[in-house]
Length: 456
Image 1 (cartoon, rainbow, N blue to C red):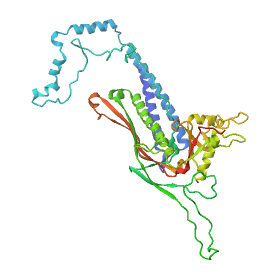
Image 2 (image 1 turned 120 degrees about the vertical axis):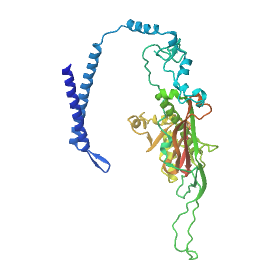
Image 3 (image 1 turned 60 degrees about the vertical axis):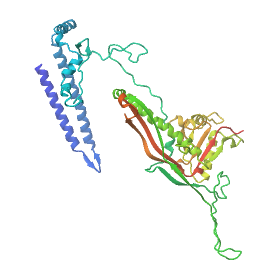
């Protein structure tokens, strides 16, 4: 035993020395402009010491475990029957005067005596607690708090022994968000006021489907040949509309028992995540489809003066347009409004049709690059496929420049007991909330695509 003790002391001494060496190496690291600079030699020495420390620590733990087992094995054995007999003998020695009710123990407690028969008021300094459960007039220790019921309808299914609790299987979450296509700014205002400028056309824009003004810029001579007067410059017309984008609140809540969340941190995490995820789903829907009525945002698809393109307008000779062709033609309308489209929003079913488009030889046109890990793109534009947009509808536009999201309050989680009678029920409210506004400043930069009818 003394030899093992000596060996253990040697290992502990070696461990302390290695830790001291590593501390010295770490102290020698240089810091330049807030960055720690480590030479290859220092890193090699530090890593080697760490490996030695782990090995020595494992040896020490093993020797200490062996020492503990050896000490336990040298103890005299005691049978279960002997332990039970000893406990029974102790209980049998109790007299009736030693067996007290909970009420008697409470009256004899220091907490109750602190009231001094009411002279010190009616509130005890501290609550009195029963130290163990009271059963049949005897104070005994708990073996278990409640014997599990094996009934299938009872939530406390189980029996004696350990319980293995598997992780919950949460629902899959939508990973692509319409918000990701927008630039986002923070604001402290309750209302965003802005001018919505409507585009204007020029004579060379023959295919431009949107007209809200005229760009009359032209070359001008110094004098008018007819009357030799100074030439009059042409006037262009612009259209500005004053608009407001009120900050809207998106929120929902869930009730839960305080003990459940204290005892089940995984459940608390799931509730928080689900509440936040619910906000994200609502946010995508509002950005696209909000009608501006009541407390709704005015979504892009319902913004006045956005352009529209129907798939059925596509060319039919020699080959009818595909949905990918319709996307490209819609992008052209945005280009003609002098805005380069930066993204596409499609329903997953419409995106599936585009990905599965084949050429005359049956070769996929889009799916190959996506299947190999490429970013989902069509005509150089990123694609957000989401059920937030209706099937048969697509949206192409300059999300990065023609519209703006404003975060008044980013999504957050708050918890409170102050709701109805939740305080006395040990219940709490978990609230998820965010506040934001959306301003579509150049509607002609967005094109709504109608996929309902194919070219015939």
